[in-house]
Image (cartoon, rainbow over all chains, first blue to last red; front, side, top):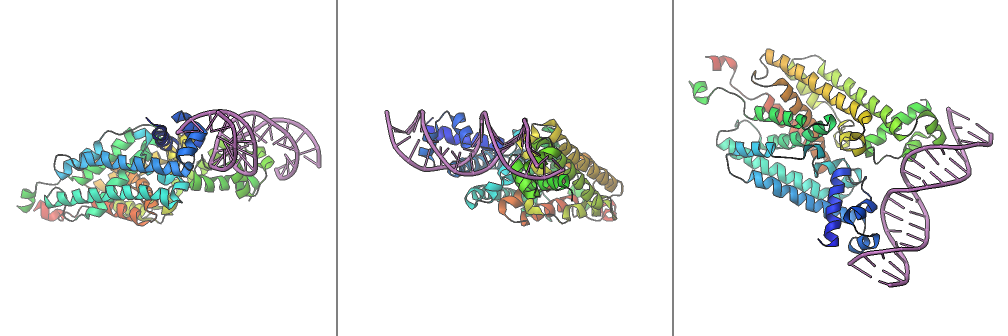
Length: 194
Length: 194
DNA sequence: GTCTATAAGATGATAGAC
DNA sequence: GTCTATCATCTTATAGAC
């Protein structure tokens, strides 16, 4: 890997682990095995490096999500596959985590990729929910945009619960609750109609 | 207010705004209008001050939540009141936010009040959901503990979405989605039974 | 109880040699 | 492109005077 690559990857790791405020240029250099001069030659400073790292992490998240959301199966199955996909739950969401960093939120440049990624995810899920409604898998009375926001929020909040308790179990519990709400155990339609 | 009080309150403010890593003793002293010697006389250091601040913030959250959850109304109404209660959405959750602080999570002493508070909230909500099931307001097929976890996660994740977009609207959207899932627009029971 | 002095190390960067 | 030197400031305290 080239030096700029190693610097970006190191920044991604550290941003995920310690956040923007908790990540120093020195720590990045050491993690990347690069000297100061090298870092400042390739990047203007900490915000510049963070921007490159955040953009790549955001793109990564899209790719990972799309692999599941655009995969095979019914809309309902794809939403479930997304919710149940393997995650490093205790590490938290590398994108969502950044919203708790005041310096990221205060910078339009750094916040934009975070916002756009979560927004993309919501819209992608909204489309799938809508598709599911057309196929009769989700109640037609639901607002797809709202439900999509609930799905993303449950995932993001699941990370919070898991990290608070020190166990991934809380994440899974929240997801199971959401899935049970999405597929209410109603009577078969035929019976209701009868 | 006494000096220790001012120091604790300042720490609470700064922890909420900038997190543990982003809050320096110096910033606390300046915010509280206290000198270094004064701070180190009353507290052993940053972790000690943070512990006092976190404990109080956790207690505050319980009190605020209990005011709504233990209030008047049906179980369903109380859950809705909790979800719709006025919040400083863009500031995030003063308790949940701490889970993204590596130094807080790595310290059992600092993490415990966070964990216990979110756990209390989940159990409190689970009891109310169960009550609602007995009264026929929520589907009996639901697992109250799971749904409670989903409710807490949606709130915590709602803060993430709101902060990412820079607007409280995303929080409200997620909450509306959850409420619509909790109260599915089913046929009246009498009709189903007929 | 509060103040100032002092300190070892980190932070975030610039300058210039190689 | 990478390295070392240097820098002003911040961090997280400790010590001791007042």
